[in-house]
Image (cartoon, rainbow, N blue to C red; front, side):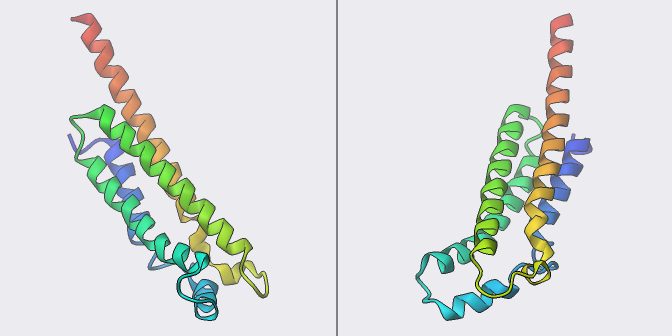
Amino acid sequence: MIQRIQSIYLFLASIVSGGLIFVFNLWNTIKEKIFVVDLFSREAITVKVIPFMFLASAILSLVAIFLFKNRKLQFVIGRIIILINLFLLGLLIYLSLNLSGETNVSEKGIGMFLPILVVLLIVLANKAIKKDEDLVKSVDRLR
C-alpha cells in the first residue's frame, strides 16, 4: 500500500533532502573557505561529508517508502533519518558559526534550514506509521 500518507511525507522528504540541496544555496562561503585551508583539515572534511549525508537521508527516505509491509522497520528507519538530519543540522550550524569574515545571513544560504524541513516531514510520517500500527493492533485484538 504505497498510497498512504506517510509515503507522501517520505517522498517529500527525499525530494527535499536529495533535490533541493542543488537548488538552494548553502555552499557560498564554505567553498571560499576550503581554498584557504588545506584539503585535509577538519573543516574541509566536514564540508565533503555534508552532501553525502543529504544523499544518504534521501536514499533512506526512498527505501522507507517501499517497506510498507514492515511498519516497525519503516518507523526505525524514520528515526535514523531524523538522527542523520539532526547531526547534519549541527554540522551546518558549526560551520556557519566558524566561518570567517562578515556574518551576513544571506551569504550563508537558506539551504541550512533544509534538515529542519526533512525532520518535520519524517516526524509526520512516523506519526502516520504509528497510527497505522495502532489500527492493525486494535483489529488483531478483536479477532
